[in-house]
Figure 1 (cartoon, rainbow, N blue to C red):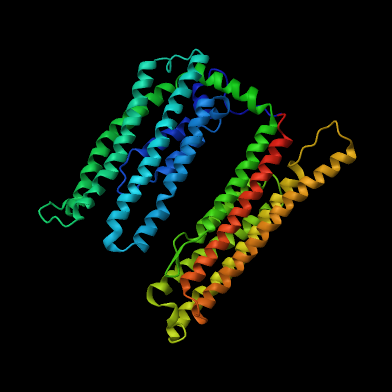
Figure 2 (cartoon, one colour):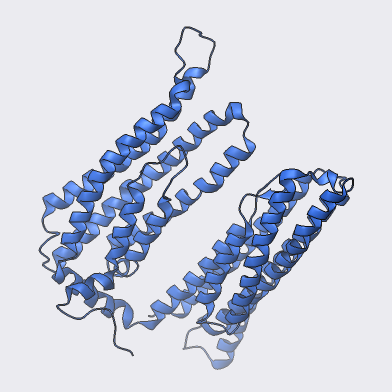
Length: 463
C-alpha cells in the first residue's frame, strides 16, 4: 500500500492541508452575507459543500463531525432548492400574489434551515472539542472560547433568517379592508435594505470571530496528529471502506445528473437548463472511471450534450421570447427561428440517451465486480447461483431505468414537434407528461442505485 501523502508528524502546515480546513475558511466568506427573500448573492449551498469537503476525512473518525457533515449536506440541498423556487415564483405567480408567495417561501426555508443549522453547528464544535480532548490538544480544550464562538454562530444564523423573513411580513398589512391601518408593504424594499445592513454588520463580526477561532485551532498539532492516526488506522488500511465510498459518490453524482434533467418549463423555456445536468454528468463519468472502461465515451458524449443543450436552450429562449408555438405554421420567420433550435434539441436528447446507456453500462460493471456477498461456508455452486440471482435482480432494475431513459429522450424530441405542428392538446399537458417521464427515470435510478449501494456494502462489510 502506498504511503499516505497526507501529513507527517510534527508538520502543522501539512496537517491543516490534510484536514482541508482551508475549505471552511472559504465557506465562511460564502455564509456571512445577507439573503434577500429567497435570493442569495453568494449561494449558501456552495459554502455548505465546502464544509462537507473539509469534513470528508474527519467525519470518518468522529461521530459528531459525521452528524455535522450530514446536517450540512441537507442544508446544501435545502438551500439549492431556493433556485427553482425563485424561478417558479417569478415565472408562474401573478404580480398580485408574488409578495405573499415570497413571504411563504422565506418562512418555509427559514424554519427548515434553522432546524438543521442548530444541530449541524453544535455537532461541528462538539466534534472538534472531542478530538482535542482525546489527543490532549491545547486549543479546543478552552471550553469557554469554543462555547462562545458556537453560541455566537447559532445566534448569527438565527438573526440572519429573522432579517430575511421579517421584511416580507410587511405584505400582511396590505391585506384586509381596514383603510385606517397603515400599509407597510410600500416600504418592503427599505426594510430589506435595513435588514441587509444588520446582517452585514453582525456577519463581519461573526466572520472575524470564526476566522480567528479556526486559525488558532489549525495550530493544534496534537489534535491533527491524533486525527491522522485515527484515519489511517480506521480507513486507509481498510480499502473496502474507501471503495464503498467511491461507489456511493459515483452513484450520487448520477442521481444529481438525473435530478437536474427533471425540467420545469414555462412557455416552452426550461427553468433548469439541461447543460447543468450535462455538467453533473461529466463529473459522474469522471468518478466512474475507477470502475468501468465506458467512462471515456460517457465523458465525450456528455461534452457533446453540454454544447448542444446550451445552444438549444439559448435558441429556444430567443424563439419563445418572440413567438408563440402557434405562430410557426403561420409565419416564415417563426418557422425559421423554430428550425434553428429544434435540430440542436434533437441532437441534445439523442446525446442524453446515449450518455444514459454508457452510465448504466458503467453501473452494470459495478454490479459485476463489486456487488453481492454469499457466505464463504457455502458450496461454490450455491455461491455462484446466489451471485447470479443478486446481479440479475440489479441488472433488471438498471434495464427498467434504461427503458425510462429512452422514453424520456424520445419525448424530448417529439413533444416540441407535436406542440408546434399538432396542437390538439395544450402544451402544458405535454410538458407535464415529459416531466413525469423524467421523474420516473429518476425514481427508477434511485431504486436501482440504493440496491447497488446495499449490495456493495454487503460485499465489503467486513472491511
